[in-house]
Image (tube, rainbow over all chains, first blue to last red; front, top):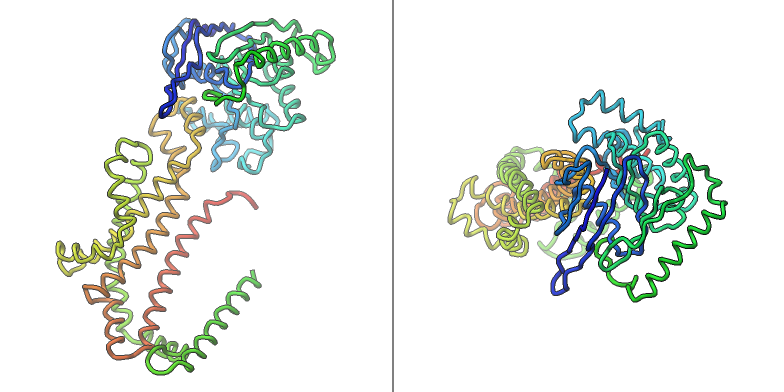
Amino acid sequence: MIEVRGCMKIFPGREGHPPTRALDGFDLTVRDEEFVCLLGPSGCGKTTVLRILAGLLPWEAGEVLIDGRPVTGPGPDRAMVFQHFSLLPWADVEENVAFGLEMRRVPAAERKRAARHWIEAVGLAGFEHHHPRQLSGGMQQRVGLARALAVDPRILLMDEPFGSVDSQTRRLLQEDLARVQQKERKAVVFVTHSMDEAVRMGDRVVLMGPRPGRVIESIEVPFPRPRLPEVRKENAFVELKEYLWGRLQAMQGDGTGLKTQDASG
Amino acid sequence: MAWKWGLRLTSVITLLVVWEALGRGLPGLLMPTASETLVALVRLLGGAELWRAMWISNQALLVGYLAALLVGVPVGLVIGRWRQVERPLDLYLNLLLVTPVSALIPILIMALGLGLAARAAVVFVFAVAIVAVNTRAGLRDIDPNLIEMARSFGASETQLWRRVLLPGARPAVLAGARLGLARAISGMVAVELLLVSVGFGRLLLRYQGDFDAGAVYAVVLVVAAQAVLLTGWLRRWERRDEAPGLE
């Protein structure tokens, strides 16, 4: 379980600019096996939350606990999937998927076995010895997902993972992730800009507002799992999307300014 | 491939023809013809003098250039990673980069004498800054997202170097080694021409004194050929890095 209470994060201002309060009074609880989508306008601190949970970023005040223990750095219970994939360009698919295991000093034979398993699980069998530049964006992110799953984390942190692929690929990746999640049952914190994606993927959508980043509203998504792709046609799905759009639009209207410098993603 | 070599051959032949024409057209000692140069080249390649000069010159190159790599690469890596170390060193690197290094040759000779040590030191000074600066640039250009990714999977500093920083900097390090070699060869010849008359430099000065223009040009050709061959050999290492598996 993830518990964040009253988290505050301040980025120092660069050369004459005032510091940015990226998060203030941020609260979030994520249960085991729960899929939570963080939705909000640019600059509301979504990615900052994720990087704090990953142990990559210190914060100024508040508590960040995982299973009751404070986060002090990256740990084997968490793995991250990155917006721009972050694959090693000089390593092939198999080495990339095994990267996390290698960092944990898992023996080579075992690494290879795990890598093969996860490469197959994300539908990349046959591409073990391809390099990232030989793969499409969608395939690269499958590698990123396999790399995260290979370390068998209890928590997956996903930073707009499907934000930089085309919309068809995005739908395919969403369905595949839903299928994987059905089997693996991780706790997932999933940052997205897309209302459709948030409602399709999340057990809960946490709506964030900017300046400073904070939780505006937490909405349970009423559809049971496993969810079929047809869920998108249901009225409740469309209505929830429209509701979220309304809330986001209101935020943009109240002078919070989407066009200002985005310090935290 | 064939047409590429055809183009190269055509360009060489054109150059030789123009050179020959100019050499014949211009009066006096200004310029040997291509054929005079080729004759001198064959004569030099057949004798011991050129090879002895090459051996003597290259001792300084070998020692000085290897030292430049052994110092330049680690310095570049350290200042690329830790800005606290960069701040005090940056000034000297910049000085070495922008100063006409030939101006330093008298200083080095005064300090180290006229022997191999002084010539190697000149080669070192010519090459070291460009090696260090390229290495630093290679490290700086590594996608910070990759470093963050590695940290998120719990990479130690050692693992980060082995799996991310060194492989990421490798192409720029090799490019720096190649640029450094070109500068090292300049240094090797410059010191021999300016102060310590041995090796290639001594041959050049002597043939110049003898008004043996063909031989002067032939020695220059040999030095150029050596530089092209060595840097070409290094470039092959760089190529090996590019596009692995892109058949």
